[in-house]
Image (cartoon, rainbow, N blue to C red):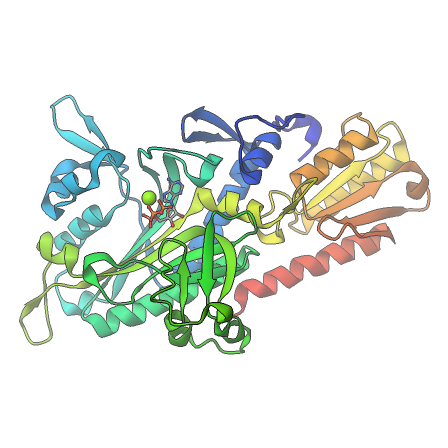
Length: 440
Ligand code: ATP
Ligand code: MG
């Protein structure tokens, strides 16, 4: 992509309305534009990151064997009457009347619709286990939308729903999904902590929230230091991990905490995902029944598994930035490499930039080429703000020797390299992350 031709409406000043760093940086870098309270348009660079995050989530969901579908955003209120949630949901759910005076709701979640799909098509225990997921827009009329896309009203969510014959099988599904979540967040270059969550009327321990660790996060998390040890082990004991003590500020009760205060570790996080064993709540309420191996009818045990996709973009920024701007982890970066032409009117300089653009592009890397006739200071500041993981600086003096500077955005380290050496260094980065995708 050539910066001179891109739609990247960066802001020089800090927007007054932004209280958190991710919101500020997303506005400053022209990733999003607020259309209405809690409702954002995703501009080209924001959309690139959003799509990459979506794709990583999709790949890891597919890998655990759940199948992607798409359900409507507007759902008939009748389904919500059946589950009993139409009244329970209250004002957070947006209701709309169609021309026939029928009430539609803009989906805040989709248990009802997916259970309805189940009762149309699932006949016997042989059809299970099965899981369906979508990556679809949700609307929740939050009282206080804030922090940009962290708490929006319209937001993108990955929501998966699973069906199993009994608790034992549902528990296996739960742990498979749990490990998929860990892999998903790790691939995005963020550390996540799973904390025990409120299970409501169903009880049991099978509900966890996944928090991305970020110093600027809103939730305080309390956890058993053994979790850190476990996470470093070669093979992860998932069950042990999920049963060790970890709670968020809303759930942490010092009186009930199994650990002494001096043993507890604390950290800050942002809730990115929530997984839940639902039991037979929806299958019973909505009459989803299948024939069991013994010929008797049974209600499947369900689970639901959410990730806030739009919120994730902000969470990655909260966990990866400095005073100059964003620092994208390679797998979710809008571009892998920025090419900075320090003298667009110098032919040798421009030739090297264009050759790099072509070579890196042919390798499958995405480049952002700053070909604008701008001052060096402006180019440095913009590229640092955008946070592309690697920058190649090409100036007339080095260009005369076929040399460039390769800068690592995170460490700030700059190396003077030949053009080929720079390309090879980026190639090994690319290979490193490609290998990561196929591990475990
Ligand atoms: P919260 O406690 O933050 O309101 P929730 O418990 O209502 O979250 P879930 O219903 O479990 O959230 O939704 C699954 C995921 O969707 C959450 O973990 C979060 O990442 C995301 N999410 C929920 N509400 C919003 C929102 N208003 N804006 C952006 N993302 C959201
Ligand atoms: Mg909520």
